[in-house]
View 1: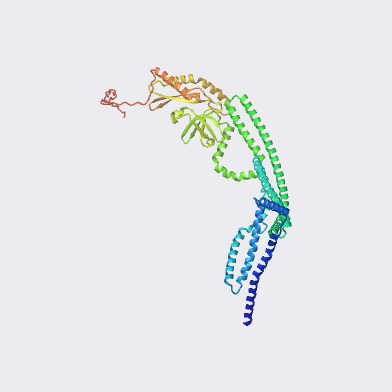
View 2 (view 1 turned 45 degrees about the vertical axis):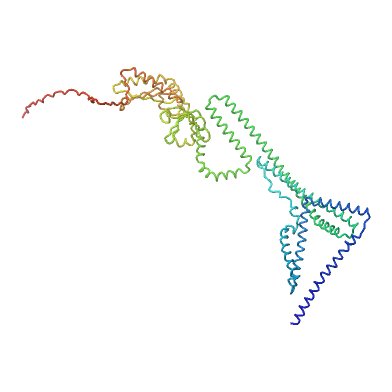
Length: 566
């Protein structure tokens, strides 16, 4: 126990001596540091020396102002030096706090000092966290060259724009990186000039502590920045070579793509000129408008197809890959765009089959609705029909002049009648009228046939010629083109039906002319009377009854006996 007490007393005594010795040493060092200042203040320079010293001081101040103005390297070094100073002070504080905490007993002054050390340490921790990026290699961010990124692949003319943009970005990054290097060179040059000025100033005042401290700081800055400069110089050379290599590669690809685009443009221009020449020759030497329209449509489609194929095989590197993708996607596309594909197939059937041409008069029946008109256009997806005034519009629609769009796929699912197929420009039309039972039906039929034959003779001759031409393409049995008359017994009389050939594009005109002529001729005949449903109404008058024929008296039946032989 006594040994322990003596040991503790010895430690306390030793600590007291150390605490007492520290202020004494500080005072002694302060006196020693103060002597040069006193000596400096007592050193007297000659007027020429003082003048030279002042000029050096002004030059040093001027360099300080230039070096501190927007110099990224100086600012980063200042942050780095601040971090090192704080780190050193933090280590000192940790050491002092450790010593004070391990003392058996603290005086009130030491307790206050401990609290001040702890508070300062906590403050320094926050500062060090803010400056943590300057702990190691503070100039790393400026030394790293900008990322070049992925070199663009130029596979089409639009890639040329991307390539030029990429080269412009590389040039901008290279200039910025080179500016940082030049800034480092200027910073080192300025520090060397400052170091030389401080050396010259120390010749006049060799004991000036501030000049010595300034010289030590400048030396430390140069020792820090010179290795950075060498690394930066090597990195810049490597980066410039890499940029030049990328620039040459991209420029070569741009030249190759421009040459390729110019070649393709020349081919397309040549095809376009041929296309224009072909259309001009067709327009000049083809008189048939329908044939010209069809040839023009096919030529347009063929030119567009060739254009797409040239561009497709020119700019798609892996055609097999495209075919594979289209193969997988074809099922979904076929379902989602079924109507479109069916319309395209219908277009091929219409154009190649020749069932419908531009200029034909057709009748389309869809869900009970009937439309009759002239085909004015056949596109890849639909036919455009201009509705005309026809018997259908007269009897059903009561509207005409509309533009009807008929999808091409209707040719597979709905009824489409062509009034002018294969050069036929005529159709059969009929007129019906009723006469009374006691009229002369034979004479009425003769009148109707005579009138119909009179006005349809031209169309009859045309149809006969057209049917003779169609015998080589179709099996025609009934080729009778003369007007036909039929008589039928109906509820209200005898119906006379006359049929004749007329222009498919003007049926109502001839129908009206023949109807008027038949009506006028029948009115002139006394043996013929038109029949129509009638009804008689008698008001406050006895209803007349038909007279019955007189009854014939019946004679009594005579009875005769006849002997029957036995």
